[in-house]
Amino acid sequence: MAERKSSDAPQASVRGSRDLKTAVPAAANRSDAPLDALGESEFADLYTEHSRAIYYLALRLLSDPQKAEDATHDVFLKAFRKMHQFRGESSWRTWLYRIAINHCRNLQQAWNDRQMLTNADEAVWENAAAKTDSPLRVLETKELGQRIQAALDGLPHEYRLLLLLVADERLSYEQVGTLTEQSPDAVRGKLHRARRAFAVLFQQSA
Amino acid sequence: MNQQTKLNSQGQEHEQQQTSAQQTQQASAREFATPEELLRHDALHTPVPPTIAQRLQESISKGPAQARPWWKRLLGGSNQ
Image 1 (tube, each protein chain N blue to C red):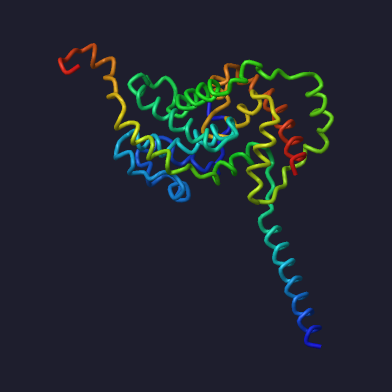
Image 2 (cartoon, each protein chain N blue to C red):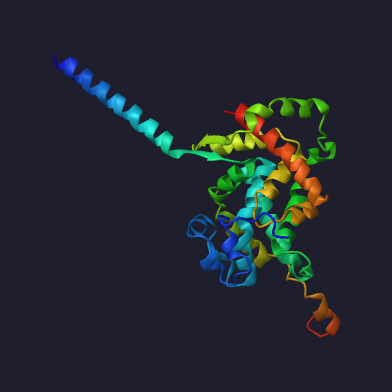
């Protein structure tokens, strides 16, 4: 089912590795938490391997670095306390993502509006297709993160979550479908529209 | 005359700065085929605050002991 993995995946090399601390890219280790802070344990390895992905998801879902920090802490604390419940039916990554998605969903009180798409929204994005079929050309500035956040904030929650999960090359469409409670085909279909919507909003944020 | 020389010098410096800025921008301009590629790039350059691990360590050390696995409870043992 590894249908969308590519060789340039920054974290692909650490999959299944027991020697995570050496396998994680040096740049990641530099900026990540002090690895010894949690002790030489499997949980520390788990944190080292997945904290970046979980923090980034929380950051872009909650649009707030402090809330994302709190959420990441809470997600891993919850994971630590529930580690004994993990049966290996999914990957650790998927398990952690599920905790994180549920946690962020609970934090977002506005979740109940489900942000259903309207035809008007779809029409706007469809009509803008000509502009968005070209690659996204960006300058690597400090504002890049803000532009990305602005574009994501403009998306319906479902599209935002879909893009963030699909961006993780360690997840297959099937796993993304499981996490978002839909079929892989539905993921593919919605992904197309999510990409287009993101591109329109990203260009508007320039 | 001195003022003219100074202005020329400042103008040259300004041009050099502009050129340098343009070169920097050109060097750092990137294209991403899909939003996912852009997000992946962003994620890779978004550091995880080190305070999370510190807080986590504190929370774990303060918090309740980790529950024993279900199979350990099932197999028994008095050290509940």
